[in-house]
Image 1 (cartoon, helix red, strand yellow):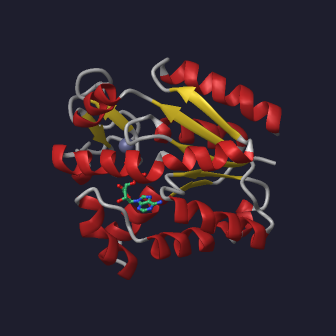
Image 2 (cartoon, rainbow, N blue to C red; image 1 turned 30 degrees about the vertical axis):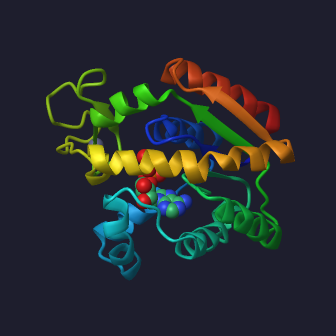
Image 3 (cartoon, rainbow, N blue to C red; image 1 turned 135 degrees about the horizontal axis):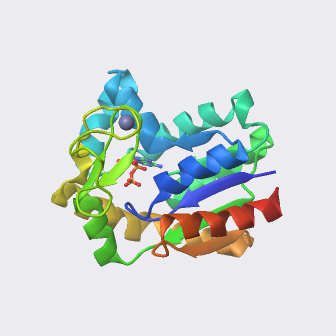
Length: 217
Ligand code: ADP
Ligand code: ZN
């Protein structure tokens, strides 16, 4: 069973790997960032609550985030595995996830962490552009779309995420080092943690992670 957490700092390439992994291993992709953005786009009460926090680079309160994840993990499509992306992001979230997993009989059994040096994260995020329609990711210097400003996959106009500005990114990075990185130790102790180098190229990284998943299927 593949009940997976994918973790790493903003800009580590989680989104790219997550998309490929869920396609190859037929797992539901549970990205809390995507779920929040969807709620913001649709103007739901949850979206209204989260919008300002997210745009400033902050963390949505644990209770709100955990309730959203519990609801999602309870759904039938998670019975045969899942890939959590962007959750847990704090120790209390990790502890709550243990309880949720216990309750639902869907405990996490593999934690994949992607590491990338800070200078590289800054470079990636400052030049990142995303497609609001299909979620594809680009970079203004190193991953340009074929036609400037237009998504290769779906033809929509690509944009800079509101929280990819310098100030919000600084806050996200600080939160990551302070609140999220300590989670690695939490899982190392449980013995189901693996660290990957996020600078070896998206294809190589995918191959390495896929190899590990094959062993755990
Ligand atoms: P990143 O590219 O920084 O990994 P995500 O797309 O995963 O960003 O998330 C975007 C934003 O959504 C975060 O900066 C945060 O404000 C909010 N968010 C996502 N997941 C969580 C979480 N587990 N706990 C609290 N806030 C979250
Ligand atoms: Zn697109």
